[in-house]
Image (cartoon, rainbow, N blue to C red; front, top):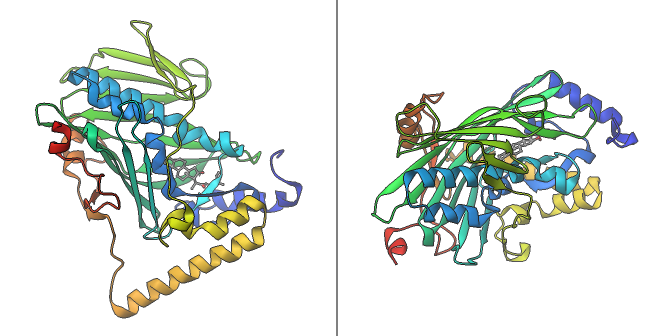
Length: 385
Ligand code: 0T9
């Protein structure tokens, strides 16, 4: 295809053949240099908050119904950043760096215009298969989001199909002192454009946001040729507790704008700029922090020096292999730093029942409240002031 450099055509077509004959963990396949991204998957949870004022706005809603609408608006507004931002910054979807076990990513968005400070903490909690856990909080607004991400991939009709495994739970401290919780499930992805060497993501099927108040958002995703015939289309139905007829229907394209179908009023708009998180300088980072850990590889990829990139990558991989061997010999196990694994998430089980989530239960990684910044945890006292 056009986007594939002449010298990499052969390796791109063998890469595609290996994807086609393989399903499972794509991260372990070696891809040609032109498709490599210098950014690790541990940075991806930042996409949840690159419009921090929309996250903060959840705390300002006065009723359960308005809170669901604020959560839906924030969620829809993250999709452009989650699923199209590599196309914008690098020309196409690229293969991210595969995080090592224990890799960390810390970042924040400063307080501005009374939105409060938003903190992000990410830890790679499994290497094979890759699983990333994250905790995002805005303590002054009483908001916290906890989740984890893994993928099951397969190949169909020339596209990669990615089933996201994992979910997020959003916790909102209410002025009454109570807590409202939201279970957020994740859409399926189809990676198209592979043949031409310019991959991009389309979202498919449905995802859900279920509130403990009973309000439910069902979001249906469609590409070209459906509702509006446009790519990246969605339709969200917002239903009150115990009802199946929607109180609100929102329609539009998730990477642009949408409107409330009944009132005709604008709903979300992400045509404006997003805001990148603030991250410590590489020099000031610890050795497990993503940008520090991958520094040599990332520089090689950015500068087109793929020999250096692959030598630096081998160093990291060999070090990891040695570590696993030493642990096996000593009969010890890698200890997670910020999260504890639970086989079943009670919030998922409880809220999942309300919309018949499949599967009926999922595991989770619970944040241990030992953040690197003192001002990260959400407590009732902070909200009260
Ligand atoms: C969670 C997101 C996820 C991670 C990425 C599938 C994918 C790894 C997972 C699901 C974030 O919240 C949202 C966005 C993009 C997803 C990635 C896109 C992608 O291609 C990779 C996979 C593992 C590949 O690298 C496939 C090979 C590559 C050559 C295609 C570009």
